[in-house]
Image 1 (spheres, rainbow, N blue to C red):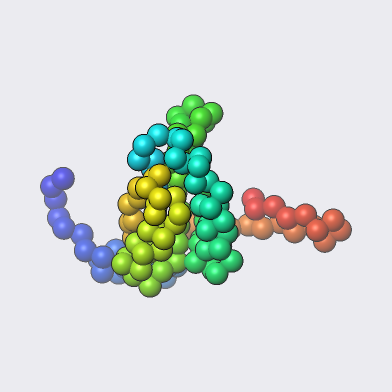
Image 2: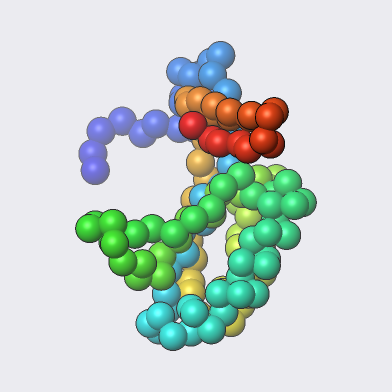
Length: 130
């Protein structure tokens, strides 16, 4: 790709007044088919819940295929960390990765725009993210 080099500070300056929350996106993908993934799904989900409870996880979930019907083992986790190195350490400690069932790539992600709407019904205690 050619053109000007856009540095991080250029984006931060252009997005003044926006959230500018630094997060890290972990793209996770199978290394040797779905057998090892499914063998490690239970400890992986337990680990994910622990990240959520500690306030490290922002969100996570699987990627479906293009027909939105089949899971081929890929997923994404968005985490809060102090640095890219720390985010990589967190991702590496996931049992899915430490077992070798999946590999991962971590990318820094600056969250600037978006909205979260939560609907809570007092009468029955139900809640919904809209």
